[in-house]
Length: 220
Image (cartoon, rainbow, N blue to C red):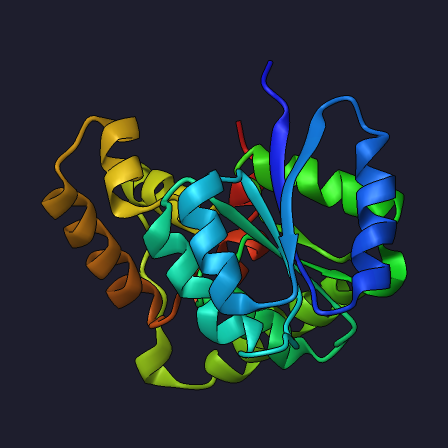
């Protein structure tokens, strides 16, 4: 099995050194590059084709969340794991909405970071355990509020729609989902539109939260 190719994007040199020391000790991981610049990171994503980008939100030249979608455009196979000091749930939701694959706090950046990297490499969504309760509270809180509104009736999804939703929540692109399910990209787009309509949801972060609440990400 190939090593997990990792690009570290953080403006703190000492932190990058610490992460490199930690990950270099793992036989299945390889650091292919590091930088404190978001724009340089974008060039490195194109040039080095890392599998996982460890991305800080506060960089020398740009907000990490603003450039995150550009990484996905540059390489549809890259997985982006945000490594940050921000415990605010709003940053987590922005990460998911902009195509991020995971969110982990710097204070937990040891064995938890290794677990997170392996998880996103398996095309899973990884959320720092300390924030999971907050996310679930947000899911069920919105559910309770929404249950009082007649225009928020949730329609059941078909098995195919559940398959598509799971893959969307796991970070797959339309093209990757189409290839995996042997369908056309146009059909996948239609399924996604129908899913959003049935669930009264608009953003990817909402789809991810819904998939988590229903246990779709953990089904075989």
